[in-house]
Image (cartoon, rainbow, N blue to C red; front, top):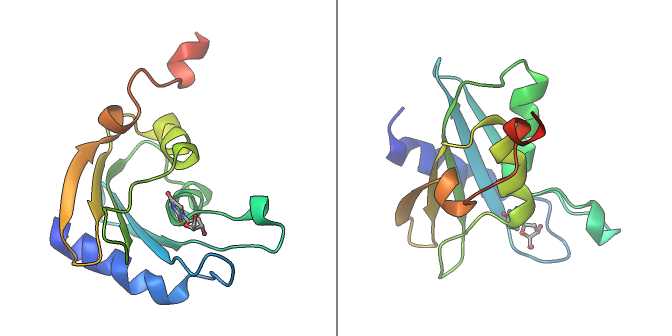
Length: 131
Ligand code: THU
């Protein structure tokens, strides 16, 4: 799957977002080495802190299906003017499994920029930090 296809797949997830409080849908698509893709959307809750972001939805879907150390690229998209940057909690959760993950971050015009998770979370704390 190309980067552009992954970004567009993430955009299709915006309609699945459950966002009655923020009205800010976010979509994600996480590509694994074998070509499997796990999608995600944000799912909000009336107890606001119980909300889960799109990226973490995709990640926990992947991990719960047996994927761990084979993540290649994540697309994160939103209908925002600025690029839809992953929040700190998502960066941390992803860092656990893929500190060098490629991350494609898109804006409302479907333009995207590429970063590595290392760039988004420099000097992050991960499993190695517990040795
Ligand atoms: N959101 C995500 O889904 N991913 C992020 O990385 C940033 C924030 C969601 C959470 C909430 O439903 C809405 O965007 C507004 O914060």
